[in-house]
Length: 452
Image (cartoon, rainbow, N blue to C red):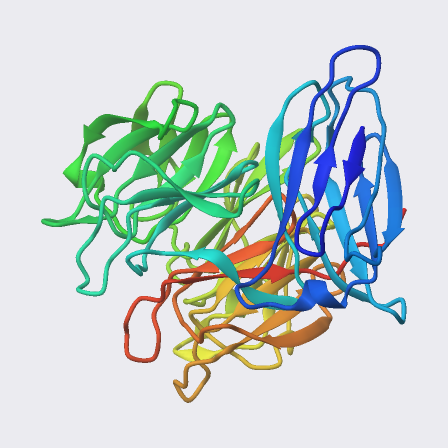
């Protein structure tokens, strides 16, 4: 593999396989619009994770860098990390690619580069601005389905935020306009869409979207069941191509048989739904007011179980993230209408469900919450006085310690946070203080990982 950094703003990397067949990845660095962070870099480092290789180069008098790497093109999957250091040796910017096949293929790849622990605007934005978007995370990016525009009308717009280009790619329009639909990401490349608000009101539509069909995907309308209609629900995988959808009654969405049916022996479910893989066992952890009587229900090999131990689980306007342990951490939201700083920690493997006070510096509800396995962000929302918040708290998912509070590009509430395969987290949608949808997409750049 050979790589060459040609300029402060562009990485040109040639990944050439040994022993015959070759392939080339052309790597471009992208930043927030107007950012000058790349100008401060005097030493550049490029690291390939698998097989592990690392090279460094100082800036040449002409402003360019030259780096080269060489590995066999034998087909493992790796990621490329860029790091830039200033004259004092401090890391000023970094970024990471999505997963790349180290094989005899040619591709163009962009890496979003920013200072650690910052939120910056993406190179692209929602046009038109909208909120209540259905999202699903794939290794290749985040699928965006529908949403509500500035008039409140649902849209049929479909886009993919591509982790390899950091651009929005248009998808085939949905079969109908929807806001607040749930979207499940299947292992096969299918996305399963259920419910949402259409032009005539709340629906029980079930659609499948095939992301593998070029050039813009392909929709398959499956069925409409008004009895099961819902909007603003949550979804989590229960097993391969099968999902649990919250609501009354909770549903099992089966992508293999293309069917939807009530989840048996379950109380009503509301709030967040997070999947947690424990060895070969998958648990769904549902937390929120309206989930049973205690606010916590797990769905796993033992069936549907309700759990106590965390009174503040009876909350609304919150989010959740999977964490080391393994555990689910619930952050933000309000209990009886009052924003809380407490976190709920669920460890279904050991049946431990507790709350920890004081995790958030500012209690908030309506924040965008997501994690990347190391840290979680709690971005925006409203505080106890109802004031719109323009900052983001970063929480260590291992210790639940407060890492930092950082400014957002646009204050908002009701936004969605979605994690990219690069470890960066998107914040998109939501509304401003006037209730208008926000078009700016923000990218959270986490702390740089320690070197192996």
